[in-house]
Length: 393
Image 1 (tube, rainbow, N blue to C red):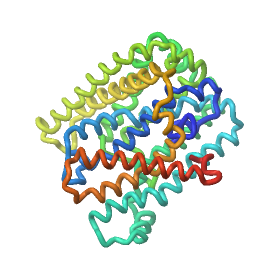
Image 2: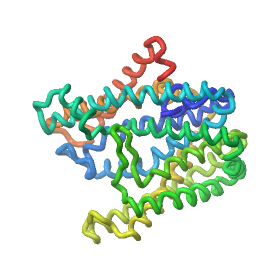
Image 3: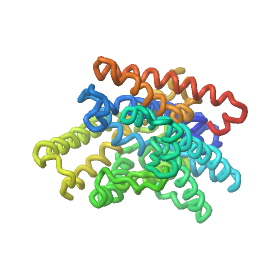
């Protein structure tokens, strides 16, 4: 996953100093990384991922919200610095950097970290399974899920696509940059543009594929309905970051920070409409396997509205406090990418050990989240201390 510095969304560049030191974007992507850890800490205690006897409806509400925006926003933030990176680095350097920071971690993670994570789930079903046997079956027979690191290979593919586009013409994303400039004082322009673009590309895919289908080839997986959604967010982000960053949508003196509560209201309204449709599906349609096209289209529209509004609300919040003092997010920032890569087995093994404890879902989830953050942070810091590892992590 690419990051602004050495964390989950900013490996993409050595950009201009004014961009690289944008505290608002740094803090936003570190916040999102923690949301990822929270997401995986609470899934076993939800209706959807009910792998623990305990559950709480509040976690279902959090998982629905997270899943409806945070990966799209990660792609947007990752795309912000692609064009400056392509402008400042030689082609060979850019490609080697991407392979080192994204390709190598993905290969290592899918061969080690991810099998170790899913082994905890396998033991719950088959307690006598040997780790070596489980690993060999996963990588030779399958299925070979990539867990959360699917993001890394998709981001690598998008970076390589951006490289080809840039070689074709550096001005390809200039129209998006113009929209960003216009949105400096009127962020509603950007919201409407993003809403229209994502609705046109996501809603038909959701209607055709449904929500649950994934494309899978070994450890390379991607949710079918979102196969165009994520590239859209990535290249929209690339257009915003293409030039005039401080005079566009994310300018620290722009209107986005002042209007952040407007986007909170839009996000909450869209979120309530999503839950209304979930109620219709469960209580009125009988929770069918195949949903009617009108349902999928309506859900898709509310989904993209929530995703766009939530991203603007979060960015507006961090832009509002861009010049504030040092925060905990600043402390975590450097180790964020490593935390993302190593957190999954930590979270799943903690949940495995907590399974038989007689404790409320909230208590189990809180323990899982806190320990996952602490252990992931420690593991990432230790890995970065290895000579040469900091170039990757």
